[in-house]
Length: 286
Figure 1 (cartoon, rainbow, N blue to C red):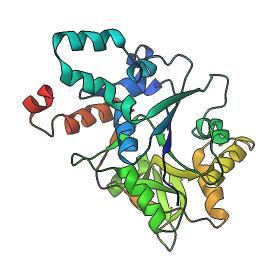
Figure 2 (figure 1 turned 120 degrees about the vertical axis):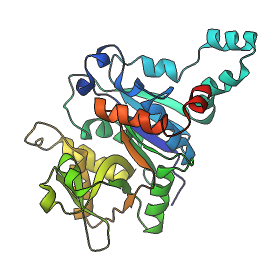
Figure 3 (figure 1 turned 45 degrees about the vertical axis):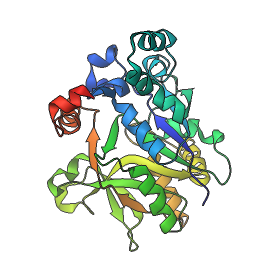
């Protein structure tokens, strides 16, 4: 298995669950502590060895580009006033990875398969790529990388693709896409928001994947078929096709804490975990 050095992060939604603030602030840029949500995903990618990141964004996305771009005036000011510790903070991501942007326009179909299919032709034969949502993340205070564990888990299983999952209390499974496992403990299918009493497991999908070229091609195939009853094209349909072909798709449970900034309640909880979990004075001084 070749090293995984590329990631695609999906960010093109309007963030309607977080209106009205997302009318002015891109959802992925909402702060968790002193950093935007998406930066935790980027950090995990970099820790996993990724050096090339493609963001799939909407047409109006500018704040993300500004955050990962260069601000020479700010750099010069920090240099002039001797705040050198902040210079390293604003330069660190761009020193460790190269960033690209693919625009998903409003006239395109809707659903999680759309941005993945949009990038399919960028992927080479034999290449493996991290595919991740950008408004939720896995938090490890000990600086471990969940995406590195995903890559290692796929390799240990002799597979070229896989997905991360987190366990939730059974009574909460009705809020998620719940993963049914095959006899080997790999992915069988996802049951969307089941009755908790009938949920096939307590492992839920958190939209953090390792894709090979075949999975990208199957996502393009999904886009040629009728959408789901809700009108969306779902990336999980490509997972179903992949395992139906006999391909292994290991499911790797995370060791850290899954945090979702897509809802107000989830965002508040994420801030409590990231900031409130450490002494507040130390967090504010960082």
